[in-house]
Amino acid sequence: MIRVETQDFDIGAEVKALTAGRTDIGAVVTFSGLVRDMNDGAVASMELEHYPGMTEKELARIEAEAHRRWPLQASLIVHRVGKLLPGDNIVLVIAASAHREAAFEAASFLMDYLKTRAPFWKKEDRNGAAQWVDARESDGKAMKKWE
Amino acid sequence: MRLLYFAWVKQKAGIAEEDVALPATIRDVAGVIDWLKSRGENYALAFADLAVIRCAVDQEHGDLATPVAGASEIAFFPPVTGG
Image 1 (spheres, rainbow over the protein chains, first blue to last red):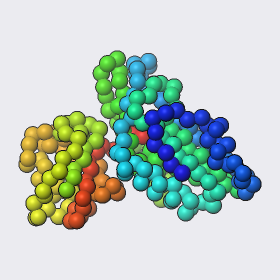
Image 2: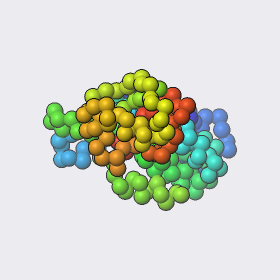
Image 3: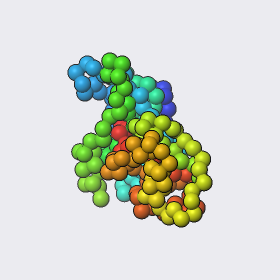
């Protein structure tokens, strides 16, 4: 399942919903990303732009690829858009499997692919001056290890 | 054909989306960019460094060599920074 939305998410509630009524899941790995101030208190807020339509398709493609590679019982990707503040939740990935290895690896894979393929762009507001965040080379390297 | 621009590509081009009739001679994404650059300074500015331009044809990642025949939507944007 994938969701792109402005509102915050509750990690516990999402895990509960994903695993409700199921007895075949033995491992749940969750990753949540928060808005980080990488500029010593200069970032007042962040605006998350995305490509409506493609974002959902790309996230679904990434999720399908994870299910092709690992025996997952369930998964969830939630990404927030719009205005966010330092400390806010921004992304949630949950991978559920019978065993922990697949769940750990799939969660890591989902994040690495999301960061390099899902069409989101961050714009920081630094004391009133808007600045687009540059892509990190390390994210590209992180994705390449899954090839 | 609909062209869309995101993030700083949108900012530099000064436009979010537009419907255009591409010349029939244009075969691929590189051709679309060359054509756009000839249409105005704003596009020349947005597409000055192709190393930092990414694109999608009909909402799937593409590259400069991706064919555009029959496509209904092409998007241009910087490397993504979500997550």
